Structures are given as C-alpha cells and as structure tokens.
Image (tube, rainbow over all chains, first blue to last red; front, top):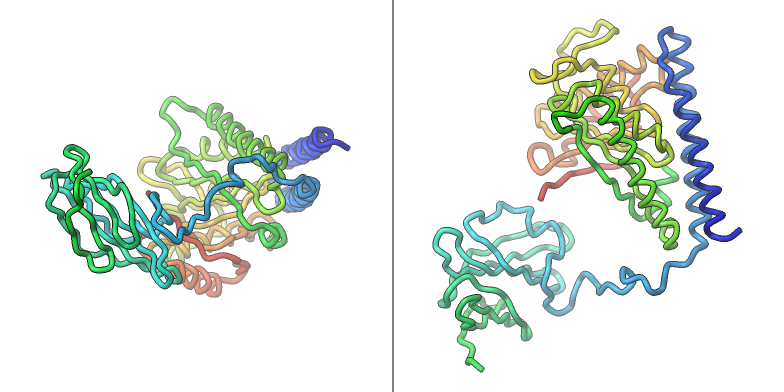
Length: 191
Length: 215
C-alpha cells in the first residue's frame, strides 16, 4: 500500500471512530442509560487509542523528509554566543519592565548559561544591558543588576569575541565591548 | 489512563484554545469552531504522518474552559464539535471549576451549582461532561494555595461516580495544572492527592505534574 492509500485507510478508520463516538452522544436520562453512556464512551476511547496507535505504527515506517529544513536546525544549546532565546527560564524571574530589550544573546558556559539582553530604558532611552545566569539543571535564574554603557541608546548586541560582546548604538553606531566575565566595558575603535 | 500512548511519545503538543468566544457567537458557531479546531489538529497530525515524525510526536487538542467566559451551552457545544469531528486525537481540558462545590458545601448527590456572576448557568454536570466526554482528559487548574480548587475537581469527579454509573464515570486527571503564581507544581500535586485521599471514589491515577507559563 502506498503512502496516500495508507493515509486514506487511516482517515477512514478515524471517521468510523467519529461516527461511533457521535452515536454515544445521545443524552441519557435513566441510571441504566447513564451507565451505558459511560460504558460506550470508554469503549470509544479505547478504540480511538488503538486506532491512533495503528496510525502511528503505519507512519513510523516513513522516513523523515531529508530535505526538510526542520532537520537542519542548529543545536539549540550553542557552545558559542548565539542570538535568540534559549528557553523560557530567562523570563521566569521578575522582569525589568522599565527596559526594552532589542536583542538577547545566550551562551552555554557549562554549569551555567548566560543570557545577555541589550536595549534601552523605556522612559529615558538610555542604553542598558543586563545579564541573567541560569542553572541548566534547576533552571533557576539570577538577574544581575542592569548596566549602563556610555553610548547613546538604544543599543543592540552585534558581535561576540570570546566572552566579549560588542554593543552598538542603533542611532550613532558607536560601539563598546562588554566582557561578560568581569562585567567591564571597554571602548571599541571605530572602523 | 492509557499510559502507553504518552509513554511511547517524546512530545505531545497540545494546541489549546479558550471558551472566550466572540460576543456574536452562539452555540452553533462555537460548535463549528470546535470542529475546525479538530480539523487543525488532524491536519497537523497528517503532516507528522507524511513527514515520518508520527512515531515520536503527536498533536492533541486543548480546551481552557473558564466558567466566567461563556455560558455552558457554548462551552459544551465547542467540545461536542471537537469530538464529533475527531475523537481520535485527545482533547486535554485545562480549565477551572469556579463556583463549583468544595468540601465545605453540602453535597446532595444531585445537580450542583457552578459558575460565576457573569455566567451563573453552569452546573457541575456541565464541567464534568466537558472533562470526560469522548477522548478527553482533564488537567485541572489547581494554582490556589488554599486547596479549594483541588476540592472542587475532586467533587466533580465524585459527581460523575454518583450520578453516571460508578468508577468509569470518574474524571481521568492527567495531573494538576499549576501556573506561574500560587502553588508550585509539587504543591498542586500534593493538594490533589490529599483531597482525593480524603474522599471515597476519587481515583488517584495521575501521571504528570504540570505547569503552565504565560508569555
């Protein structure tokens, strides 16, 4: 049986289950009818579960599409800095609602992973950067105090070199480097 | 609880929706939406089938039934629509039981009042029905630290036992649903276990401790 034929037969099975379940829907008023309703409902469930198991069994013989871009996604835990959000745990602490973060970069450093957010203070537009340290086992996160580099905000993280992140002003394109190990800023020479 | 399905899967992705229906909708439109939601779940699983991923992943439906967001007729209509279209793909209900009986309330063994000031028409049978009809499993919200939500869900399960034919009519609790506030998942689990232990006929067959997060 080819794939489409197999899928059609599975679809038929599911449709048959649906019709059976609909038949069970009839309202029951007497105790006997209520007990029968439950019995039929349970039977329909078991049948549905069995059919899904058969459906999955049929599909398990189909190899994953080799050209599907989902197969080529990078490892979600980078050994180097990467832009994005590694997990929900960055946000499981009381958020700093006074900041608007434009970019978030993260980095797996073994017993901790680091998440660095850069943007601006909402009310003043001042450049701000903030580091979160997450325990990869417990997912407990600690939010460092915000830091304010001496360039015009808002800022983005635009590059990384080891533990140094390069921060750039969106408007003036001035850059500073943040050493995430020491949390010290240093100037970056313009090109 | 058919453990075998979940035990054989790496991921069950629940595609959930609430009963906060748009104001013009009636029961017909709500039922249509339930059917459409089931179609979406089925199509998503067809994609998994065709791409060879069905062996480790499955999509399921989700329904956050809040008793302050619609009347029971619409709430039931959506579930009926989903189940009429496909009972094959499980529906996980993860709603509340606002206003339903707790242990402190008298239990006459018959229909009890649930609901909210906005929608006081709900009865325990409505919530029980939506949580058990077809291929549905309950993830009861149990985030309040008072433990009252666990009591309400246990009473709903006992309502099924007393009125719909005994053990087969108790609710299948997949596990308690904690949120970002109030009970931790462990506290929610303990609440449910303690409350079930405190009442006969409430069957403790929970498998998972869960937590929902909001973004």
